[in-house]
Amino acid sequence: MKTNLLDFDLDGLVAWCQAQGEKKFRAVQLFRWIHHKGVADFTHMTDLAQSLRLMLQEHAEVRALPVVSRHDSADGTIKWMFDVGQGNAIETVFIPETDRGTLCISSQAGCAVGCPFCSTGAQGFSRNLSTAEILAQLWFAETTLRREFNTHERVISNVVMMGMGEPLQNYAGLVPALKTMLDDHGYGMSRRRVTVSTSGVVPMIERLSQDCPVALAVSLHAPDDALRDRLVPLNQKYPLAELLQACRDYLAFAPRDFITFEYCMLDGVNDSDDQARALVALVRPPHGEPLPCKFNLIPFNPFPASGLLRSPAARVKAFASVLSDAGIVTTIRKTRGDDIAAACGQLAGDIQDRTDVAGRRAKTIRIHA
Ligand code: SAH
Ligand code: SF4
Image (cartoon, rainbow, N blue to C red; front, side, top):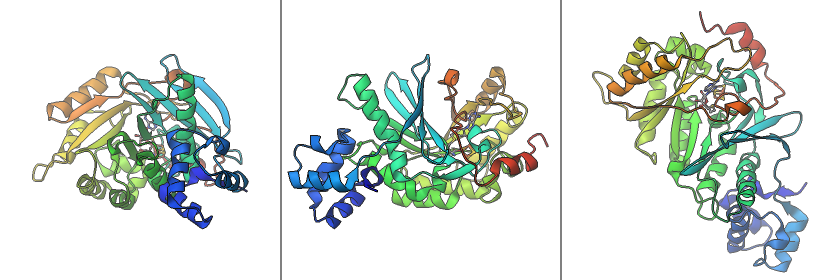
């Protein structure tokens, strides 16, 4: 099997090239061809020595993922499904806006956290994606869209790790991918434009602040442990007090001076005014320092068998008002691409569940307890 060069950040590629007897600056050139210019064919890498190109052809490749399907939404959103082998498929979503192009990337085939309102969680968990599989989503989308839009300019300006999977439960695969997104020889994205969204893997939030601080979004969904234990089962391991402390600690290293809290609005579950007030108290404790944060309310995107309903628009507005009246910047997320099931929480891919998360969940989780 040839080495897939999408598996390396720049340090990794330098080490691999040096092991083949090549100098560091050759690795930088190669890295730029792959990620900066989007070239996969070594014969086109004209400033590399002929001997190096031959070596690469023999031992290496830039291996993208096979596309299973592509859906284009009326609003310009594009969803690709990629085959990652052994019956697993993952999804990637491109969301164009006037001032930016955002790619929503998957980090795992399935997810083991098993939040009952999330169709990825409902599919169970198969495995972590490799760095190459994470970067292949960006590499492919960027090269494809540049060709289609007939431009040499960058099309994707922002990345959100909000596709399938819990990125901080795939830390080893994630970090080299993030580093490549940030690298000036790679995609050259600013740290503020790369967001990791997590359901709250506390020790890994701490590690990320040291290894690769990027913008952080935390999926909160509940103002107290009793409800969050059910909505985000990882809360049983890392309860709210620990999670909020980890958020405070992260801010000292973060590229932005706030944490984004995501909050999926579920009718009659987590959307009352009292719950909004409890959230305010959580991030603005009466006897403590306020936690600098913004709230992003996501109207629940229903999927079959969730048994849950989206909060009515008026309820979402009223909930948002309680937060904003307390001085917390609050936005209501526009739903994009829902005609092609590309909206938040609708990415289901095709997962060979090895953990029976779905089965166990069906037996144990009762939201309207
Ligand atoms: N595992 C990570 C990242 C992927 S989920 C996390 O949970 O943060 C990305 C966002 O979509 C999360 O905030 C998640 O809570 C939200 N989400 C999941 N299912 C949803 C649904 N059905 N409707 C609306 N938002 C959903
Ligand atoms: Fe996993 Fe995030 Fe879905 Fe929860 S919301 S099941 S953590 S992908």
